[in-house]
Image 1 (cartoon, rainbow, N blue to C red):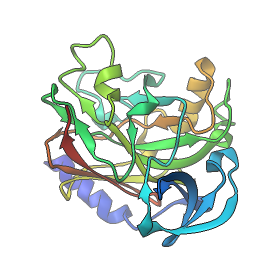
Image 2: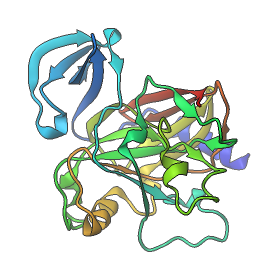
Image 3: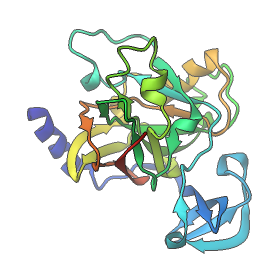
Length: 276
């Protein structure tokens, strides 16, 4: 309970501060009349792009209204990298932190967008939320130094790493428990120009605050993770790296609505529905 009140106090102090280090721009991926497109969101309008913004997509001249389209996951990655126990307030009591990021991967097919429902598998009795900050890779990264890592980060978005907690202990690894279809939502946009080292995150379950954090509190920051991951794997444009979650997590029930809000990015909001 004391942690909750501290979180609320922090939220009241910092909720109006959005750290920007460059020209901020919001990019989305959407469906309009059966066609999937990329676009830059400017107010109530979306300016269509020829390709993904991290692949140098340019404006085509076509403009659609935000209200007339369905937003999809705002990125189409090849690989999705996640991090476990990367905030001290999420590390179980008695468990030591490591000198390197605790990585795992999930399939790109697990991703859903800001207007999709999170699927609760019929054979799981305990899925939980994990609100996270997510970065999008800008260009091919192979053996990148920590000092140069910022050049390889394109944008930031919000994510909810849904986890089937009853599956994870029984499986050899976290692939199914963390990466089942319809689990991991991202969005609503990917946003450039934000200070990814100092972003506030607020998560709400059915309108009530449940998680609050700031990327400055990450044990291994995004620059370190880009460098570490690129030492062993090749990162490509559009690939995602998730921050790991903050604080504690609770069970999600059918009909619940979970929101993740990040400075300058907007609100990612999804409802929990029954799966097969």
